[in-house]
Image (spheres, rainbow, N blue to C red):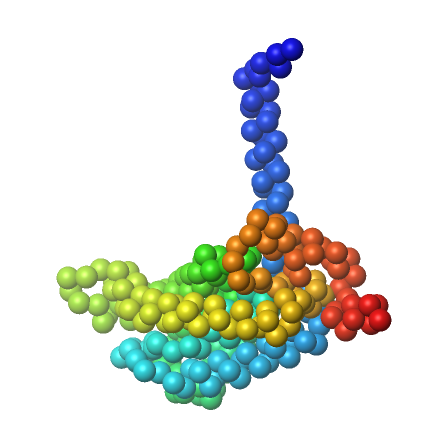
Length: 263
């Protein structure tokens, strides 16, 4: 018995259903990775964020390359992206924002301040934007590079805007101000992003090994799984923080609660 032939309307309906399903999965992934409720972060996540800020300060002091109008190559983005990948968007944004304000105090070296708005763009806003890396579910090295690229692009946007608004006069006569601001910031951000990605890969693998790959629940954080992309991993990362398809989503229990129930 031959199956009934698909009519154009049936094909269109199937395509619409697939598009709706894909859109729904995308919204679920973004919502899970956003992790916007601080009450569900847990003490462990907050402690990690505080340690990350301190590490940013320390790593930011080692600058093998410094640009004349601000900007340098260092590993200061590494702790922020680590938190964003492990914990999600808002923990990453919060960590970057706090570090940006710390930079304005001079604890991480003398800040380059020309105007209050320029300072806001180049420090709190630029480093908060690195947390956008948390929107990318990291399940292997390809998605890890994508996460670093997204976070770096967010930082680049605010540095570029600052350069366009306040440092256009430094542009040579033969170069447009927007292009000068873009190339100036790419000159140090590209190598910094590359170094960060290379260092982040073994760091996340070591973290997975130390925690047995069970670093967090939804109440604690989204977690990344590093060590090779497998079909199941992608579904777990998309399902939500902790890779358990939202098993803890309605509870917000932390790791200690889970261990207590297993005894």
